[in-house]
Length: 222
Image (cartoon, rainbow, N blue to C red; front, top):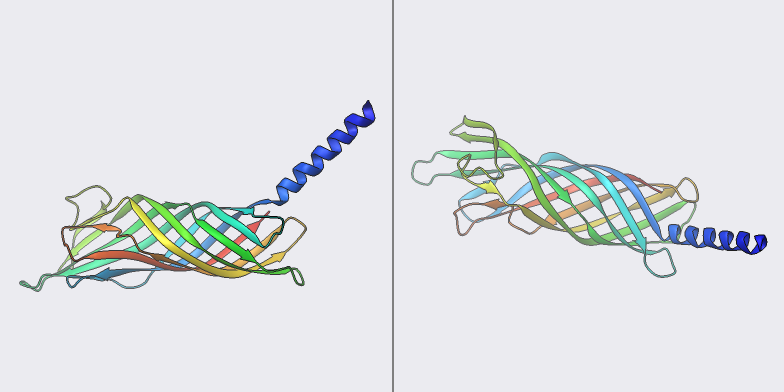
């Protein structure tokens, strides 16, 4: 009876180990460069700015091989963006610069090569929806700061426009993993988040503002 119980425990441990190999989690921190692309004739972006992302990563292996995985996670995305507007009648220029915070859940596929000399290369693509939880900034009119550190998320009287709740991006990335042990590896790569949802709400019909980001993905996977 004891042998049967020991065998059952051993088989269960093997099964749990096999399931654990199908699932990996990790930590990531990524410096990024942000800019706002503006469509329409009245508004324009205010240039490239520096942002930051950090959070948790989750990989679920698909099938019997480890080369394909569904990759997700929970990321905090600190983005910097800005938009300027020039009145065609008075020629007065107004602008606002904001620090925006999103909670993002990537929904991507990760394609991995076989490991060679402890190194595995990967490519990644998918969608990354995000929820804007904070947007604060300043409003400048004719080079004079009118409002400083105001809520640009839900205070309609704070500026010329406010930030929408949702954002969604097409995410592309590539990089490499270096195996430190059987279950631990460090990763490094580059990624591009091509936002295609309008992030700013205003009253101009022909205007649309989307957030673009290029970053360096650094992390460790377990």
